[in-house]
Length: 427
Image (tube, rainbow, N blue to C red; front, top):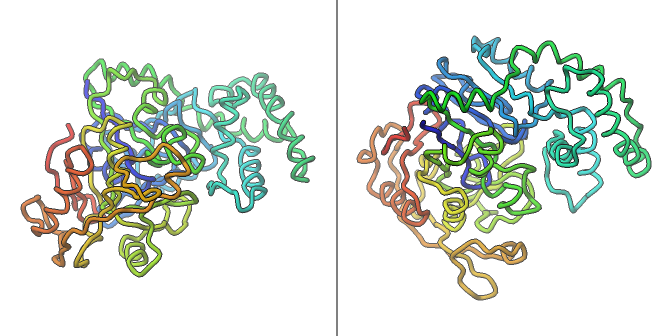
């Protein structure tokens, strides 16, 4: 019953797609358990680069069944655009399964997201404007539209009417926008029903039966730990739970079935959007990390904010997720620095703090305390084993492992599928 959770241990964009793809040939199911098309994965196979936004990375592995779980919010137009793009490139997408309990991102959710963020001005959160937050809000307010609702026009119409009762008041009276017609939304959503039908399944039953049959199931989180709605840098977070606990609720499997939790760590730190970021760089080093690392959001297209590795955040991710392993990505990007700073603690109001402060105000004012580690200049992209890495690169990895609180079991030394050093098997 090998069930693995793979998630981001920082603010997202750590390279989860590469890690998932590495395991894809060895697992039977890959499951997205939260988020929507606000999360992007880049997977490089040979000379081909694939940018995935909503689909699980396992869709690129022929023997794997990709699953969109009940905790995901689905924009049908984005889904079919992504499927079409993969089909045109020869990727078989016919095995995809989508939970009937997953919520639909409706056109009015997208509208509300965009106008609300614009209205906030300087206080904006930095959302992607894709309707993810409003869809999760509808879910919690019990006026959400689920995939299964597309197959009962009467129920669908009632639910859209209920959702628009309040939203139209807000759009017309607060934002000076036109009201949205119920019939127009219902007609658009019903237009997806037949196309979705071949993929819709009771994914909770499918996944639990697979685990009972000793199949290998990999649960893939979007975003990262510090963007978790409960455990992230609130309010600058996403609207779901990318942490390990989210895999259980977002896919419908019990916690006793999870056998391993793998955190993806970038060898430095990045984040997209607003919010505190203690190690953020505003100098030539920050620009170099951005340029060498190709730090531009897969889904948003926005430049990522870049900074040095933050061990305080890594320890926090280990704690809240119960991490058993780390996959360290983009070690190759650090080649060329004589010395590499690593944040080992914070200074807050003149005091040294070694764990993530629970207070938002304290974290906002945290200043990084750095330890300098020797760098390396050798090209590491061809290394196939840990022993083939330069001594200083080995020392850097070992230092990060000790500071972070879980073993580093794999290292990314380049973007390609084969540019990975496996130290310990995840399976």
